[in-house]
Image 1: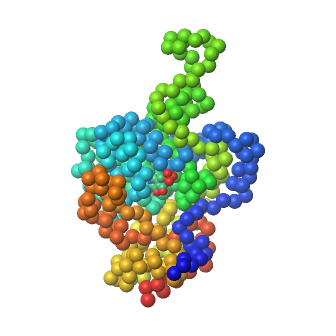
Image 2: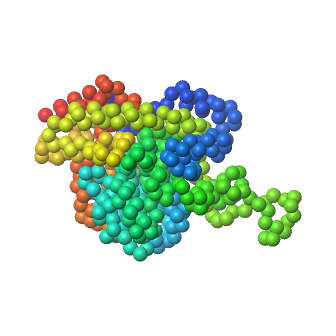
Image 3: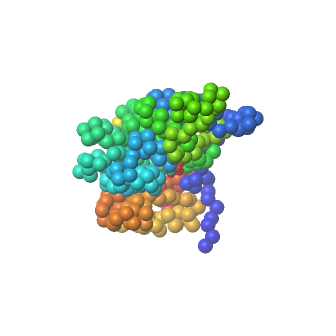
Length: 398
Ligand SMILES: Cc1ncc(COP(=O)(O)O)c(C=O)c1O
């Protein structure tokens, strides 16, 4: 059977939306020679720091780079322990793992699907350097509980806020609680910088300095760091006329281009209205699907502003009348609607089975993975598209 044409934009891809403002921004920077790490990047960083209510922001090539640089920023060393949730994209755990840390998981809270702080304390060791809470699907974790444990035990909190641009917990923005907050501007995220992009935010000047250096090969020229290259005549007695370049350490190129940053500036101006549409669409789906047997719809906790990067639904096969797999298949082939699944628990993956993990270790994450699907949600959906989606879900189980 061939895949039918996806109807009404009911695909998972392309979460964001661009307009004339982004087109003009691209052309303006193009006419200035399309630099990298120039004025648009610096402006985007300032705007983003203000948006999150933090002191520093550094723009990077993607969310994975943001996580990687956060690990370096907190001074992670091989052998350190890092805890995160098993229900996330692999980038969350890959950043510490590839830097030589020992990654372990803490099971999720079955209501929010976020890391369960009640199970966190038992997993801490004297070597726990960081905990990475992931604000899954756009709802912030229980940050009061996590930050209290961080103060008691002295570990860093690195927020994976890739799903949570503009989300709030008790009126505070995602990314502003931990030592750092990491964001992704991938094409599916709530705002995008031409398909890829990311940002790290922090209030800590020393952490920011390391992030800034390692983002660009640990060199202090070209505004890469908060400090600039100085002649060090004791080490290099070459005279004042020579300019030399030094590298503090071996770092990376995780920079963003100015064309992307200029688009980011425009997207950030729209983020509240883009999120508003996601929140309205989620409210419509929750109301329209509330009486369908066998579906568990998302719970938004009162302290949270959930920005619905994704709309998660659990399917009880007995009550709903079909399994998650059959639902995904029939929705695509009968109705042209692409349903997502986010995620396969990381301890089921080859990458973490190789590191000694086994099925059965994190039962809440596993039950969720067996039953959870994500419905298409994005700001471009029309009322007609939402009605078609709901109608298709009601018909598919008959
Ligand atoms: C939870 C989470 N963390 C990190 C990332 C990595 O972001 P990027 O794809 O921009 O590298 C993603 C990307 O989808 C994600 O969903």
